Length: 278
Ligand code: MN
Picture 1 (cartoon, protein in one colour):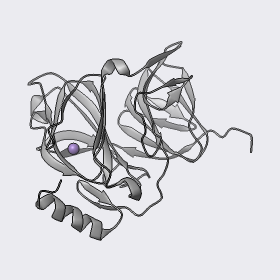
Picture 2: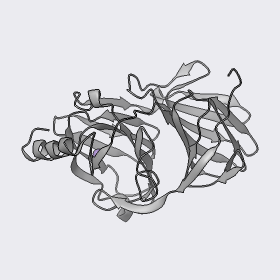
Picture 3: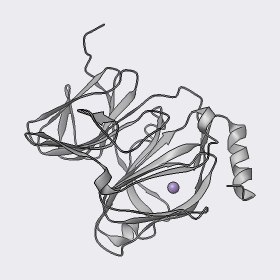
Picture 4: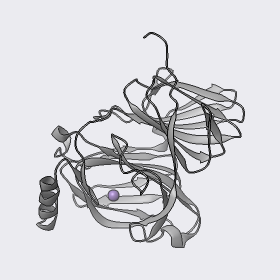
């Protein structure tokens, strides 16, 4: 077993139109009707609109418990505030890795009245032993995210994980994530080692790519098989996220913004939220 094994395509989930928050229009791939859970990932949304009516209502106060939310902005500004007095501004090219843990109540609101708002939200599960941990934020300024130029029209922003000895700024996350934003010129191939045993997917947000025999385009989430490498070829100038993480392998009990292991823990989350214990 010394041969490398290139991951193949297991399936494609096209992002479908959805709304969340107070009416933000978005494309949801994971966490929608097609697939609820790709361990350790629970949800993937892309919001992308230059019509204020699609985003201006934002995501007013809501709770989370038992997992992590990861926001990565490409355009526009989003203000984050929580019930413990934390506040931060997400800016184009920046990210926030929030470990909700035992619980926070927060809002995520556009800090602009017009122009393009574009970004992603990924939900990452926590293992049972970490679900009730203290909440923690990793707010990442755009300049903190390394942009590795691999030449010949290939460049990679590293939010989490490693490439050519360069590490992304997000640290100490249970599932040891990879989160790369890859820009690839037409005809070029991106070849990257992804730890064997991690679940991995590609989400295309520009152009078209080929992975193995499969062609994927805009808003396609491409689920990959087991293996230790990923190869993506651009059929035209393309941009995509490559995301991977260690599966947790525990039961998932989920209701809205709470993700626990059992129904009893979900009931407890409701009670704690309603009695102001978050
Ligand atoms: Mn939220």
